[in-house]
Length: 122
Image 1 (spheres, rainbow, N blue to C red):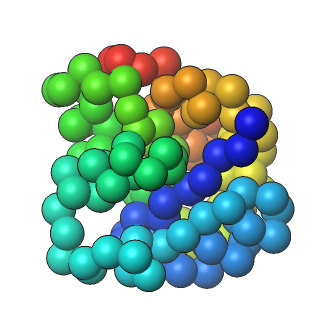
Image 2 (cartoon, helix red, strand yellow; image 1 turned 135 degrees about the vertical axis):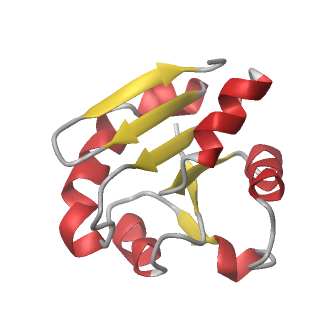
């Protein structure tokens, strides 16, 4: 089961290399889409191309809840320092722990102390 990750504009492009080096194919939105695209456009692209959205933006989880959507899956980081050198071990651990949930449809929230998962639809 392979999961591809779409990294949102609010996260560094450095995440592409970090995730890819650990076996998680990924692309930053700036490499494939309009940098001014709305969150709903990013979500639509991720759903159509079977990617998990990796973001620091709370709006993605809200959109899933309001629409009762079954995808795409979202990995949401909730902390101040979202750079890979600080957060990569936690994100990589959450990806590994929740891989099957993400493949099936889930919202995974990662902060500095834990990760939690909610199965879609919310």
